[in-house]
Image 1 (cartoon, rainbow, N blue to C red):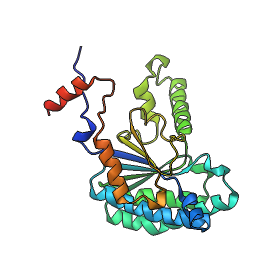
Image 2: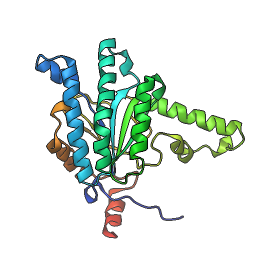
Image 3: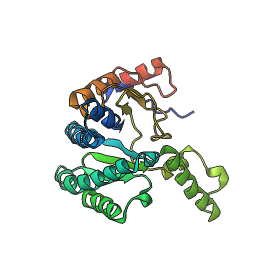
Image 4: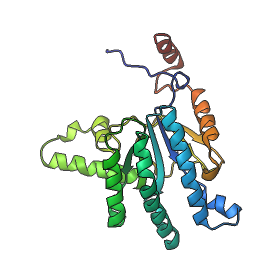
Length: 254
């Protein structure tokens, strides 16, 4: 039997990919007797800070859950505000991202967005496509189940065209059809705001991700909070089905 690669434990490497559910903007505003819009605007400032930290510390990928496929159920006024904020933020931030060598990517079903917003998304991706720094992935109108469904449709089409046999469908093939298939799967998942669930975010990709939940509301989640999450990650032993002894022996070989 061929020897398999045993991954390093978390404390021997920084997370390559951090995925975050940015929760708590509305509650942050309500605590201050402010409209929910103020919470979302404050949340954008936190995004800037966290992107800056990840870019400076050589994190390869940062995926942010900006708008889920379920968020359309929110009041129309709030959805409209979020779309407007999304558009304004894209217009303001893309040049800064490009100047800092950050590659901007979007995952999710774009068809529900206005033509103007879709154009801004495409333009932002094109402008930063050749950047070699942090991959900033924005999940917008995204859902993990949607991601798997669109992957299944691609595979079904391949089967129908005779390119793939049913018996050839395996985890590798499915993974290759998912969003951000070319990027490493998340090492560290963070959810702010006190909720302890993954809420249909990167369901397939989070299979072996370390989960970190914090009571801190997103607008209050600063770079120190991110460092605390990474420090917690560094204390964990990621075994991926191996024993602790196997992981320890592999680490001695490096």
